[in-house]
Length: 108
Image 1 (cartoon, rainbow, N blue to C red):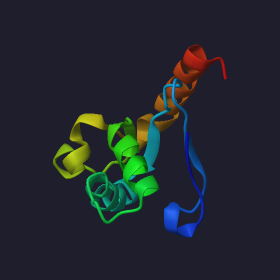
Image 2 (cartoon, helix red, strand yellow; image 1 turned 90 degrees about the vertical axis):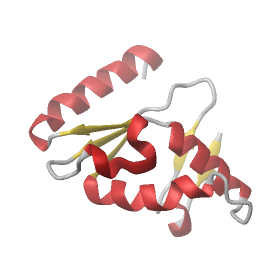
Image 3 (cartoon, one colour; image 1 turned 30 degrees about the horizontal axis):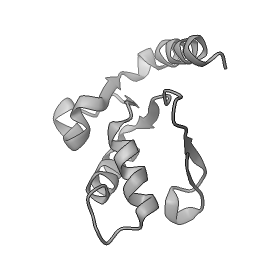
Image 4 (tube, rainbow, N blue to C red; image 1 turned 135 degrees about the vertical axis):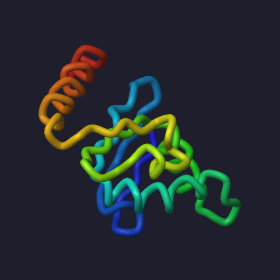
């Protein structure tokens, strides 16, 4: 399990547990733009803390759902293959589907 906490690590706690499929990371366009400029390079940065490298590696692989009417596929950069853009009008339906899928997979 990777656990990060505190302002320098994303202002909260996030857990990725081995053996449990991680839920997609839901973001808005502004957060996605900021995160894609910060996390991907850390996965291979020898000067980064080991926990940050591991988190970046896991974060690069996790699916991302971006709720946005402005973000385009061209802007998803290094996360193009793991990013799904959902228009805001479809947000409620998409989030409900993701919650149901998560429950079916994990029972919680």
